[in-house]
Each structure stands twice: as C-alpha cells, then as structure tokens.
Image (cartoon, rainbow, N blue to C red; front, side, top):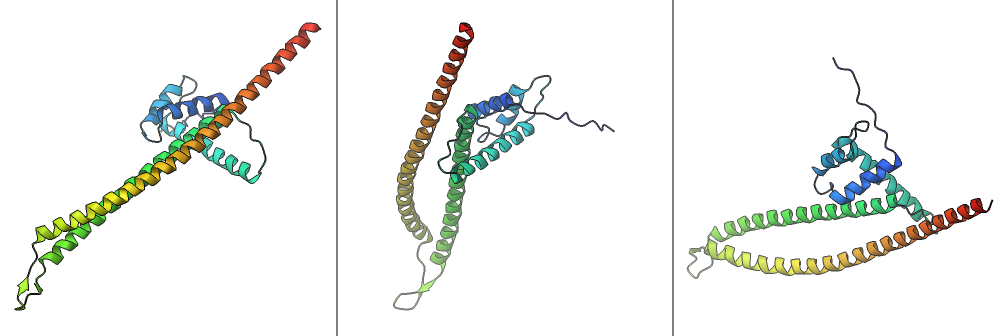
Length: 213
C-alpha cells in the first residue's frame, strides 16, 4: 500500500502574483477547464501543481481580499496599500460577479420558459373544455389552436416589453459598474505610480549619499 503523501506546496508572494495574472488572462471562473491549463503553466519540477491546488489557492486569496476590503470599509479614512496583487484580485472579483450575473440571468430565463410551457398547457385544456355559452345551451368549444396562438401573441408582446425594459435597466447598470470599476482602477494605478516614483527617488538619494562618502 502506497502511504506516501503528496508533497506540500508552499506558495510564495511571487507565485501568488503569477497565479492571479493567469486567472485574469484565462478566466477559469467562466471556463473551468482553464484551471488545469493554469496549473500546467505554473508548474515546475520542484513546484508541481494541479487544477485543484491552484483553484483552492485562488479561492483562499479571494476570500482574504474580501475580508481586507470589508475591514478597510469599517476603518473609514484608512489608506490601503495598493499593489499589483490588490489590483489583480479586484479584477478577479469583477470576473466572478459577471459569472454570477450570467448564471442568474440563465436561471430566470429557464424559469420563464417553464412557466410559459405550463401556461400553454393550461390554456389548451381550457380551450378544449366544452362551454354552454350559446342560446340553445349546446356545448361549444373554441378552436384550441386559435386559443394558443392568441395566448402566444399576448405572451410574446408582454415578454418583448419586459425584455426591452430589462435591457435598458441592464445597460444603465453596466455603465455605472464600469464607470466605478474604471475609476477605482485608475486611482489604484495612479497611487501605484506615485509609490513607484517615491521608491525610485529614495534609491537615487541613497546612491548619491553613498557616492558622496
């Protein structure tokens, strides 16, 4: 019996950055098969990964980032450190939000289709049920095909109006989300550039001081 355990993998900071870059580039949140591709890209003889390991590591980083964001909101006025890791994680959260919205829309679409099918069957049965509505009291049936066509016409008109309203609302929502995301990203990039320039200036100062000695 093979009792050898899998070698424990320890991710370093640079490994996390490489992982996050691959996630943003390949979006395994939408296409689950990409996890294996990312694992293969990041693996080396002394750093062997599989799809499960990279997915679990990504989930851990995302959850940590969510907690840090929540903590920063609670501590209003506290300036968070902006790093490439933070920016990448924000982009990944946006990818997750997009995927969740897509799943929700698909679920709602399926529910509407199921409800429509039930309503069609109900209307068909009502049309086929004899009704005593003429002067002689004789059973009278409405043509089931005509009944269903009338219903489908009404349903289509109502769904088109609802769909157009939803599309307009969605467009406005996406505009607001994109504007907010672009603004946040721009601010982060600006702050990263300021930090970079400050570090370069500090290095130049150290060089001058060393040279003067």
